[in-house]
Image (cartoon, rainbow, N blue to C red; front, top):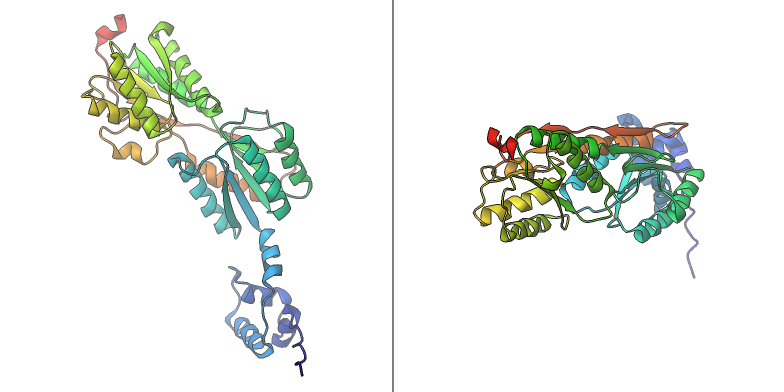
Length: 349
């Protein structure tokens, strides 16, 4: 003869038996980070044991989803993005939010698919990083998905570019590179190669144009500035620099790479070919990742506040607001041993 089903014990039953509020019982049994007085904790645990209370895991998961922040990022394999995402996660967890991360490889189709799926899971906020988005140009299906998500009570923060429709925080990539270009020109360099990465990356395009502007403002002629495409990776920088050596560097006295990873790859190729950095050619990058100070010679670069942007994006995601907030952060030139002053005679070349 079958046994009668055991009556379902609810959180309300436990709270009543312990003589505490449902909220207090939930904090004890739900693993909340909020502190509960030891006496109340003992009473709740004793009541739960006596009543043989079992947590409703599916309901807990649904409640947890409402506290979740999902990071939708371009590429988790790059050092700069790793710094940003790590800071995002630290700030979110410190605020009691549950964090998940999705990588889209900056593919529009995967961005759309990911956001559409996340809408169904209803996280508290979406933090979307993308260096392929044109400023103020989110449009089409992705834009509509993000708008619909916010109408449903979610929060969107865009990291990497400023976007009028949503909270956003971006880097002044053009200004950072312009300042670096001016420094390179003022240091006497007059024949410059720019390792520009590949097309389609808004942040890299801004860096290239800013660097050219800074060089031109410092007296470097356009005909002496050469732009070379390459894969945005250490290997891409290595291969591009190796091709430059094979073709003959000639009077090239500086190489600007669109980020530190590409710059470090180029330095490795120069070293392998017997080209001395900075005696034969100066090398610069942008980002100031940890490897920039670990290589020899140490890399001259522009330090971008990557960790600050990661933490600030979470602050925006959790803050109350009525109108979208748009922030732009600046970089700072860090001069190290990969660059040197050129002879005064170079200024006459």
